[in-house]
Image 1 (cartoon, each protein chain N blue to C red):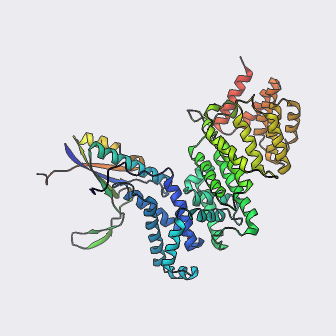
Image 2 (cartoon, one colour):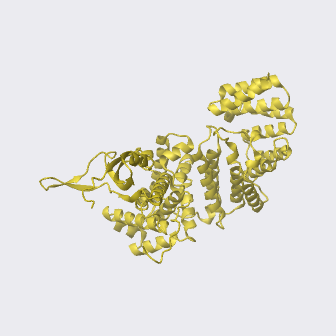
Image 3 (cartoon, rainbow over the protein chains, first blue to last red):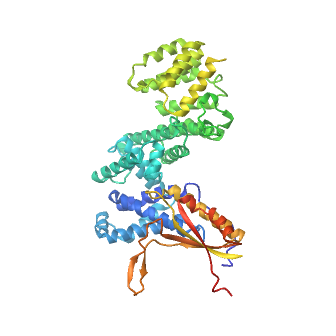
Length: 423
Length: 116
């Protein structure tokens, strides 16, 4: 044993080390060799990590695990390119020598330069040439290190569908010869807004409990927030919208833990133990919203503001519902979504205006997005409850119960109905 | 006390390659197991993994590529363990990460021919 080395605890890997290492290496190496070698880079990074898993079992984790994986991955990519005789061509295309690429890659991997490559990759995965589903799948695959089956599990789609989305995206990126660049100033606004939408949807996918709780979906929320934070750290991308989106994600994330009970069952907002909400995250969300001030608030600003009203209320009755109604009024001037109408109606009902709320709900009944009526009937039930109309409440909840697809939704509605029917 | 060799086969079951997160979990599990065994003293040598490719020397000294066993039959690695008897060694094998990863652990006592 080296006498210089004092025995200490063996180095431990940080949480999700491999996941983020994968994103980092794929982003940097693909940037070096071009998007057409994305598949090859992904394979080699995977191999390098498998090698690490084997090699680190026995002597333990090396002092610089990132450097270790990078060296193996880089060598394997270069070997593969040489073997396939595409190396010279690739080098010629990139107008670089092998040594130049290597030193460039090492520079790009340095702590201060790494975000640049990751951000470029975000804009590639969220390229407007890809459809929305593929953008989300690609972001999860490349930037979050999710496997196909993890994407499938996280997005509640089949593995086959997840694979297709990723393959479709890669094909489009290669065909259109998409460069791994940041968007030019003229396109910045539009390109950034696509990234916002993708991260927003990704977060919502992870946050939704429509199919019950699955820990992997919390990871999706965490990853969406991590990528949003990366945008926040960049001068050009840290716009009021980006910061508001950050606030929105964190204020929701603060309540993640309280949404599930010890048995894994979903707990609705009204019944959540609010002492379990993460006060620290709520405060950070608050700071981001503070920093996002603008004369023209986006839907992210307003949704974050609504979420924070809930965060600050000690219970349903103590919630400032009138303020929430105002925020929804504003949201509806930005986007006339029937879901906003529905949520505003509930807020209105909670604030005491049950009759107006009921009329508003009726106004969206014919809307295409309300097709299944499940949410609408739940909302109706709640409003009739608030209006002390027990019979109508039972009727609405029964209708919702017959439309409920997920077992936990059925269970929640059964409980509600039992309470209402009473002894 | 007797010495045993754990022979690992298979693992990483499933058609898909493990995801980064699964790799990290697997590594963590092995690291913890090895660390625990070393500290407690029953793990003599954590052993090593074997690369899947290799060659086989036949009785007539011809050399063939291989082994071409099915991946679940392929020896993937080994460890050296000390235990009171076979039953105790088997209990230790049950707690290693291999079964949970879909692989098997063959527990074999060293014959001791080379022991002093």
